[in-house]
Amino acid sequence: MQNLNSKFTLRKIYHQARATHSLVRVYFRAAKRSLTIKQKDSLARISATLLSLLFFNYFPYIVLASYMSWSGFFSYDMFTEGVSGAKAFYWWTEGILIIGALYMAGSLYFIIESKVKNGSYWPKSSAEFWLLLMVNILMLGTIFCSPWTQVDGFKKIYFLGTLLICIWIIFHIAIVVNCSGKAAFKSLFYGAVGLITISFLVPGALAMPYSRALQYFGNGGKIHATVWLKNNHATIHGKLVIQSPKHIYIYPDGSNSITVIAQNDIEKISTDNLSGFGHKE
Image (tube, rainbow, N blue to C red; front, side):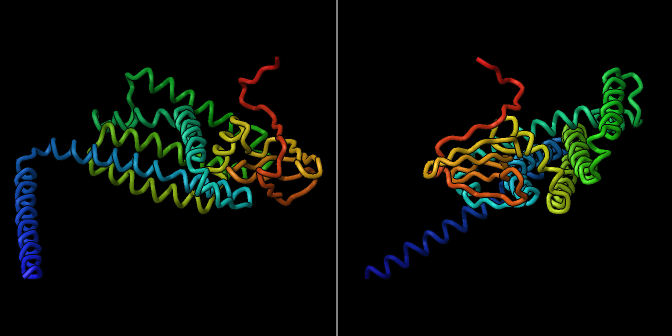
């Protein structure tokens, strides 16, 4: 008797769930028909913005992996216990990229805005456009002609990858703000594919800004460091790649190999201050 009651209850719940599902489908179909084209486009644009935020929420893992492959090491505990710290460095990296995008490709925003609103690629009456265009040309010319990119060909390739990322950031912001929701989805899709491709083929494009963020906080980026060990009171001088919750990764002076040291074996560590806000007492 109890089994029959249980089967009857389950069947009743099943039919109620099906009826609710049907009502929900009817409601959403009616809501979809009642939405105007403008409302649908606004909804699509909001959805594209939320998906962009979701993508950039998980993109730190790819940036961190790019930095590891660029530096020649892998840290398991950075993905298990150091995610919050890695994301903090990533958002600082993102800030560097956004500022870099403004200085290197900011005029692109006004070009897209003018094309959408006026049908012309040249916003002639916009003083902000011409100011940013001059800044962009000056910045790109300075970087491409600097000794930093002339000496090392790989650095020029890395910079080109970073430049492509900066261009897409400005492009995507302009598309989300000025274009349709469908265009925003396309921009996000192609941008995500491009960013992931760059992270695999040219990891230095993402690793270099991430390295600057680590240097800024004195947590790595190949800044000079001195490590004092507990057991034998030995000291190690070298370039600090990164500190994870359980280990530090360092290139000892005169060596091309990374040495991994457990945090529990370290008495203290001293690093250079490259933040620009350091001061002497």
